Each structure stands twice: as C-alpha cells, then as structure tokens.
Image (cartoon, rainbow, N blue to C red; front, top):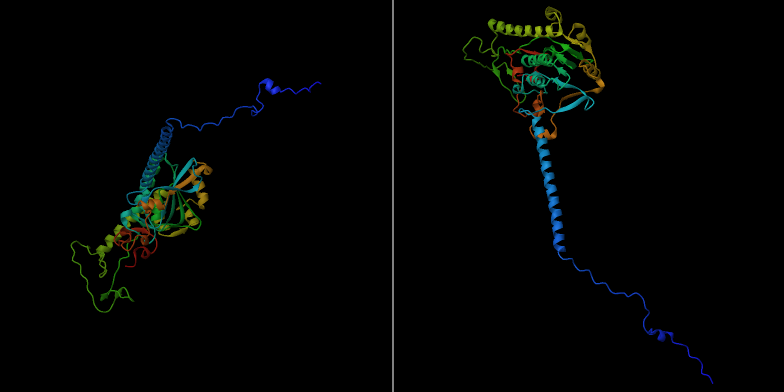
Length: 399
C-alpha cells in the first residue's frame, strides 16, 4: 500500500524561516539632531550684528534729521529780521512755480517812518522798511514790483523814503513798478507812489489830498483848572490854574496850549509847511508829468474818485485786482498765465515762537502791544508837518 505523498515544505528547502516576520526594508529610529558646534555663538553674533546695524541706521537717521532740523531752523531764523518782522513769502495771485514772478508790497494804514516810530491803533506801514524791501531785490530776483495801496497818508519822511526807493529800483533794474489803489491813496499815499510807472485805481477808490498839515495846535483860553474824574475829563473853566515855562530861545515853548501863537511862530510854522508842500508838489508833478501850477491851483488838496483821478492825471486806469495783476504781468513782459505774485507773509505759529511778530514793512496794532505801547511819535507831534488826510484823533488820541 502506497503512503500518501506529503506536501513539500518549500520554505524549509529554500532555507527560509517560516516563523520569521515578513521581510521588508528595515526601519531604524532616527537619532535626534545634534546641536552644531558653535551655533550659539554664531546666533548671538548675528543678533548683535543686526542690533548694531539698526542702531547705526538710527544714528545716521538722527544725524540727518538733526541736520535737516538745523537747516530748517536756520532758514526760519533767517526769515526773521532783528526787529521781529517776518520776511517769508506767500502767494497772492497766479500759479505756484510759474516762470514769471512779481513781488507785491503792501502800503496799508498810516505811513510811518520806521519801527522806532511807535505803534498805531490799527496796523500801518513803515516807510523805510518798504524802502529796504525794494533796495534788497536783486535784478534777476523778480520781474517787477506791484504796490498794493490803501492808506490815508502819514509822515513826510516815510512817504518820501518809499518814493525814493521806487526811483532807485527802477533805475537799478530797469524793471517796472505798478501801483494798485485798493480803497484810498491820499496825501502821503500819492506822495509815496508818484514815482511808479503806472497807478491803477480799483473801482470805488479815492485818490488825492495833495497837501501838508501841521497840528492840531491846542489853545486853551481862560482856563482855570484841568483834571479828570470818573464822570468828566478834560478842561475845567472854573476854579483857577496857571502854567509857566522857563525857556531859552525864541519860540521854545511853542507847544504851550495856554497862550496864543506869536506872529513870528506862526510865520515859521507856515514857512515849514510851505517848504514841505513845494517838495510834495514837485515830486507828484515829475512823477505824474503834471504842471506844478495845475496841482497848486486846480487840484489843490481835493480828493477824487477813481475815474476823476484818471481824468486829472493822478491815475492811469481803473481796474479790479485780477485785471490789474494780468496787466502788470504784461507790462513786465510776462505771460499772465505763467506769472505768480508773491508778498511777505504774516508770521506763522512756528515763526512766532522764534520772535516773528509782524510782516516786514508793517506795524502791529496798538492793541497787540499792551498798555505800554504809544502812538506814533513822528506822526502825532504837533510840530512836524505831515502828509495825511483825515482825523488824527483815532490814531493819536484826543490829548
């Protein structure tokens, strides 16, 4: 009997252990990464380098910022005069950065001599500072000057200072000076601008009052007392008072309000006024090409409307501001559409911190100067002739 054939054990024959786990790629656990030698030092060094770089950048930026601040401060201080006036510029008309440039200078309020002349109840103009502005303009700095005028006049000294500076500027540069009367140009206003190339009046403006005045000279008759109370001020005519001056030199007590003028004093004062008037007339006659006799006998100290001023020769045309600026640009040989008009600006908040109190050429209002401020000494002296139209009591007070 034949035994059944046993199945062959191929695994044993092949030498493979049947109890061994399935074969496959061996998997070994990875060892944790080892810290690189010197890694901390390099990381620390990199951090320090970055920190030092940032610090160096901050220092450089601080230095650059500091230099910029110093330059800006220098420019700011350079735009402030020793008298506390701002000289920085601002646009009045036209396009910023235009190729043509006209400098505008305001003559507004009462014309005084200079910053030592005191203050006014409302802002005025310092004649010598306006003259300084004109004298400081270089030939290639601007293409011409426009004077924006609204004044009742003022001191003869300040008015003539402006007129003479206009002549110097025109002769030195060969460039035009045009005037725009924006309200009023009387007495010293006419005096100060007579030497300009053209005088243009805005609609409704008044021009004239070619004359010189001295006074008022006070005279208190039959005064027996002076004084003031809470309810009453001025001169009292009951009671009794006397006043005496000890003087040397004839007419030394000219301002004594308790006596009449002598004939000699009256003659001297009239001669002084007449002399200033003759110079005034000659200035206007030459500048406006008018007959001096016509000024004395026909125009006199009359005040004229804008159109009347053109008819009598005190103005050349009537124009509004925009038309005037375009006309001034054309007169200077410029394209009005490519012209900018700039003027000295009022102090800003920052410039005020460094002493700028007013624009160069103008005074501060009396109210801004405190109780110690005084009215203009030159303007309010009763012994100095002035070229002014109107009541001075609002400027000098009633005393």
